[in-house]
Length: 136
Length: 136
DNA sequence: TCTTGACTTGGACTCTGTCCATTGTAGGAT
DNA sequence: ATCCTACAATGGACAGAGTCCAAGTCAAGA
Ligand SMILES: [Mn+2]
Ligand SMILES: [Mn+2]
Ligand SMILES: [Zn+2]
Ligand SMILES: [Zn+2]
Image (cartoon, rainbow over the protein chains, first blue to last red):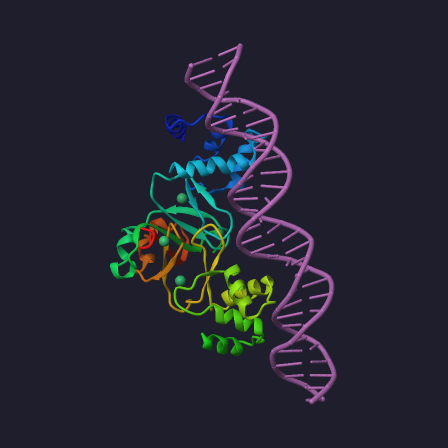
């Protein structure tokens, strides 16, 4: 994730302690934190960081394509730093755990032309649901 | 949709004017209304119906499997009366229009065992995104 | 070091949804 | 036809997630 900070500097971002700590929190595999979770972890390192700044920074990271928004339930959006490795999600219906998964094939080709209603289809999201080992 | 009312009566539902009008609003193809949209349309026929009743009724219809909840954006959930015909969704990224689509194949088989992390996978949702003809 | 526009802050506000005490009524019993 | 009551409807308070804004702060170039 350290090269994320490099890329952001290269894009003309003013580097602040708030942005740095948000970027640091968003590091690792299978990381899908809500904005409030990001805020809580960021606040452990930088106690006075505001919710507004966390929302602003996450929104900017999404616009830059560095982070992906994931809405697997109807609740808070989650922020996924694994944006440069296309993948799908497997969600436990009981505890909410989210894992990154890589299905075979391209789901786009499963949508025939006569089912496209003239749309220009550019993306597809797949969410698998089930029970994780701990909940089963 | 009229047999929906029959099925509900058969399940012991007390038939009220509020439930009737909510069921009537949820009729047709490619219908994906938010709770507030359902409330607005129901209120055209039954002006004093409350938001709480609409939420209660929609929740009951979902529990009974008569209606499906769809969250295509991070905003309000949408309620889909087409619950007895499994399908996926094609969403316009610009105007939010939603169409029902029927991809070929079973997306479940595209998730290999070694990508299941021991989960018991029971369901899969696919959301295609793109631009509708009007927005393109 | 100075300057300035970009960034941060906290709080008010909106939107979506839930909860609950009170009031109303569908539909079976008489 | 009327009564009874358990189930349903109501509206308002409340909660969670997110946006907006005016005022204050500061990163970084001159
Ligand atoms: Mn992910
Ligand atoms: Mn649908
Ligand atoms: Zn689980
Ligand atoms: Zn459109």
